[in-house]
Length: 247
Image (tube, rainbow, N blue to C red; front, side, top):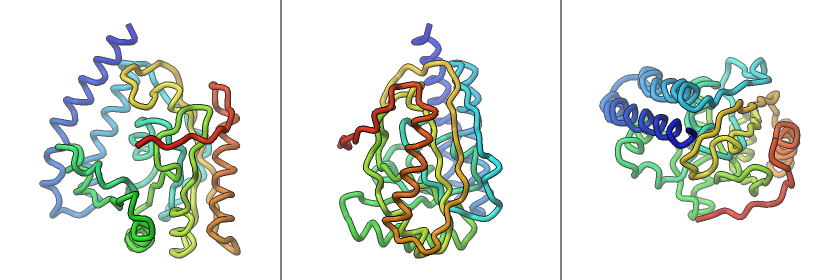
């Protein structure tokens, strides 16, 4: 039954991708918020379809911590689920992501038209400058920035190495960070076809301001908060063991 329900979800996901994403690049001449609202229909449909077909819901605590002004979101990364859910939970946003994703037919082209900060993860300081320069500009334009500091999906019960680019951006641009913890990987695992029923817990923290903090101190503060919340919401035994990134 899990296989059949998951197959039904994937069928709907693929169908919605074919129907919606080819038109997103065609809307590029329109204002960003108009393009975003159209592209967001893909997210709304698939979260609804996921609940209907696979019984996977979510509950959020800390939603009152989301302000009206742009902030930087730094979130736990366990699955593809949060790439959809964060779009629904937070205002119009721009993502920091690996450049290779833009090459995916239809889906990647749609993402490219939403003006992400697409980086080459092997370029080191160049990628860091790109994040800070483009991130500052987009924040000033009124867009939120979403960063997965671990850089890759991490299995439940483990932690990745937290990259410092989000904290550097926050300090140089002068914008606070909102940390987010969730346990989606327990229901939608990395590269797993099967989606398990249940309720994902999402915890949204209070804005963390950059005052009198170095980038390293700020990054450690974010990591401590996220990983501390993960211990509370994880159903998988939480070891906090470092996860080695897969290429």
